[in-house]
Amino acid sequence: QVQLVESGGGLVQAGGSLRLSCAASGLTLSNYAMGWFRQGPGKEREFVAASGRDIYYADSVKGRFTISRGNDKNTVDLQMYSLEPEDTAVYYCAATSHYFGTNTYYKWTTNYNYWGQGTQVTVAT
Image 1 (cartoon, rainbow, N blue to C red):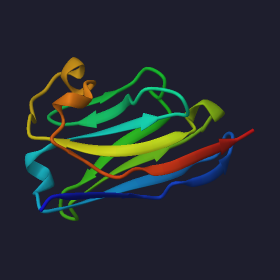
Image 2 (cartoon, rainbow, N blue to C red):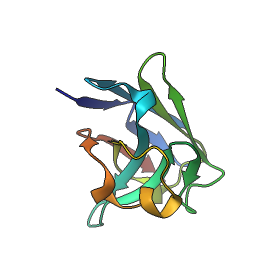
Image 3 (cartoon, rainbow, N blue to C red):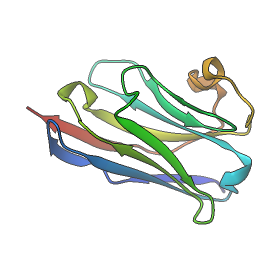
Image 4 (spheres, rainbow, N blue to C red):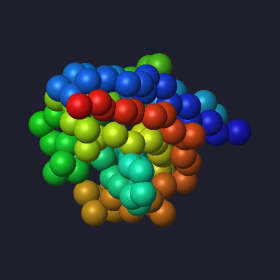
C-alpha cells in the first residue's frame, strides 16, 4: 500500500521560512517523479514544484522555494523562503511514475498516481 505523508506545515510570519517534508512508503521514490501542489482557500489546487529527471517550479515560487529529494530516506522536501500571505494553503505532495515528464506534464494533477493528505501552511502578515 502506497502512502505519502506530509509534515512540517505551520504558522509563520511573512518573510519567514518553512521546510515541508513528504515521506513515502510502499514505493521507491527514485523510480517516481515527485510534485508539490497547494490549494488555498477558495482556490483550485495548483502546481508548485516537481522533481523528475529535471526540476520545475511555478513562476510564483521560483527563487523562493527549493524542491529536493532524499532518495536514501525515501523523502522529498520543499524548502520555502520569503513566505508571503499568498502562500497560505494546504500543501500536498504527489508521485507520478512518469519520470521523464515535461514542465507542462507535471502541472496537471491528473498525471499523478498517488497523493498525500496535505499539510497546512499559514503565512501571517
